[in-house]
Image (cartoon, rainbow, N blue to C red; front, top):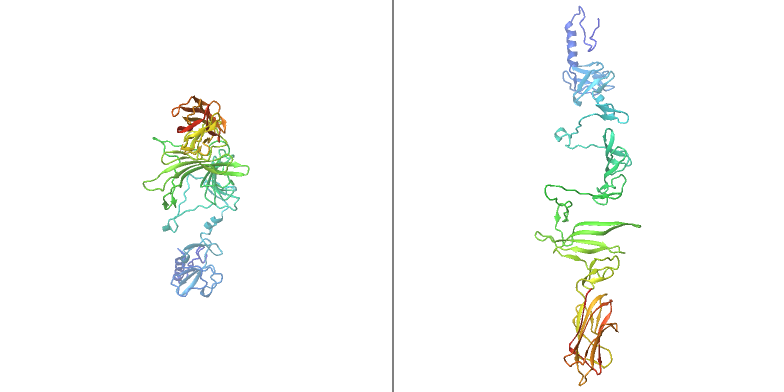
Length: 520
């Protein structure tokens, strides 16, 4: 018959044994020590200085000393002033108080019970509801998955982060969305360090949807969404290849649709905006293109501007259109819709020399007039050329010789078209003009001319068909009136000339004048 029990090695009573109570008590003490085994610690190499009755320790040290000498791997139990080393069996569990952890005996030593669980840290494959494969070492077949942050009361931060890390910039860290195991969308760092989204209708052909530049945070859409595409040049940059719109905005509702695009502009900062000032832009639409040497930007703009410093009760605004002239590179304002409701054609020094077509209108600052293009020529639409002149003296005219009348006073000459030095009207631009003159007769002594005649001269040459006259003029009564509609060229000099036949005479200062008006 065995001396001890097979598992706990408790002493057995022998037949006819004397002092059976001793053996029985030893067995009870062993049971008391081993059942619900809870030890004070496991890392001491020698007994503690002041153990309490019944204290237990796991002796894990390879070479314990003192009363624990030879106890390696055993359970040291203190009782009646003596340390006893109980031999464990494989599979026994012990709770170690100072580590707040369970340990198990594996036949050679005490190991943390959770070593097997910690082995999950280095699994080569894990399947949840499905079988993991080499290509997908972590697989799960689920209806739902929840990731929840630990609250601060639970020792957490209250935040949650899911980290996807790739080895190098050229690699990918992405989330792939599939339908029937065919890719439809992929989100992540797709072969670069910019996050992007690409989509596919069939898992084969992929199209970029958007891409955020890591250096600026600018978002590129359309053609700028592909991995490796040029960086977006604005917080939102849309590009497309081929014909068609790059941006489409729809709005529907029970009532009238509101603004599809709305801007809010302020000085200062977003946190502390300050009022806009006169001249500040409120919105802008800019266009440009490419030439052989590269891009040409901002060659056409439509801008909304503040026309006064913004106050609570003063917020005047206008619109400015800027274009670039033919053969030029610098845009300049051409049309303004002003705060007062006026449409302003921005003045230019002269009419355009190229790109003209019927129906065009400009404001010519040199002429101080609106001018319209009829196709081949430009005509004044306002501030028509005009003048009126008189003479300050009686002009003597000899008999038989055409003599220029010395008109020398510009009565109406705000455009500076009458030249007093030679009494000439200087044509400002090519066009059709009406010319008029009135010459009053004054007798020279008793002389009685047979006739008084007059005509217009252009650049010193008589204008055909303009001669008029009066026979046997009467002193202080007779006048010659000239009126003509003629086509003139810019720079032409128009003068009035007179002729007496028979005898000489005067063109009287009183009641004589010279005038003209541009028609087109």
